[in-house]
Structures are given as structure tokens and as C-alpha cells.
Image (cartoon, rainbow, N blue to C red):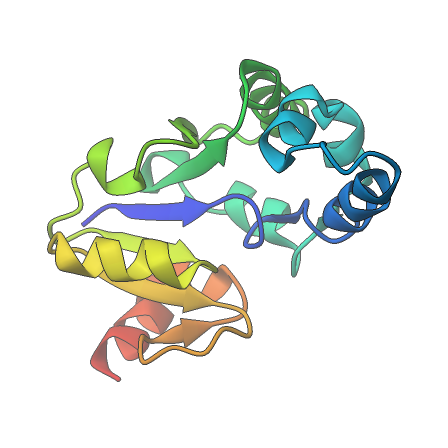
Length: 165
């Protein structure tokens, strides 16, 4: 059983101030599209300023990097490059699967029998529909098992309890 962990909203809180800035810029220029804004963004800056969620980087480092794959949606090659650099600069050795924003996560990796930890309900529903095991992260309304810390998923004993719920 592989464990896939979403990046944005699970490992790092990249979206906290990101959309505040977008809506401010949108007031100045009503024609600004969110997709264009995200493409042109200085992702290295945003990742440096983003808050790590519940000590996620240290938790990832404390487990075998071959046991967990980081799965992250991106809106541009710039974002992909910045995320890879961010994780490598922080000594994260896990594989990173880059998912273009127009592609579903389930189209890129084998879901059947594998776990996805994500804060996006649509991704979790799709994962389950493709035979995977969805685990909701954070404060989302969901019938799926829920965690607030990666330790709960990476520690085999704790994961066993979650899967039995």
C-alpha cells in the first residue's frame, strides 16, 4: 500500500494569503484570470513564506522516503520547479509527482488499494471512485477518515487505527 500526500493544504499552507492577494489584484484589474495569476506567481517566494502545517516536513524526514509520495497539482512549470526546489532545499527525499492542473491525480498514479491524504473533497471522492483509500486532512466536512497531522498516516500503528474507523 502506497501513501500519497497532497502538498498544498496538507504539507504547506500556500493558499493562506495567496488568494487574498489575487482578489486585491482582481479589484484593480477585473480581467485578471485566476489561472494567469497562478501561472505568473513567484512560487519560490510564496513557498518560502508559506507556513509548514503541523511540523509536516520534520515528520516526512523521520520516515522512509520510499514509503510516501508527494502528489501536487501545479498551474505552471514555474510552480513545479519551485515546489521541487522547496522540498529538496528542505532535505525532503520523497518522490514528487507533479500533476498539471487540467489533469486528475487519479489519472497519473495507481489508486487501487493506495492511500491519498488530501484537503480537497473532490480529489478524495475521485480517489475512492477509482478504488483508492481516501483520508481527509484538516477541517473539511467529509465522511472519510480524517487526520490533522501526517504522523497519524505515516505511523503504521496509528494508520491501522484510522483505517479501522
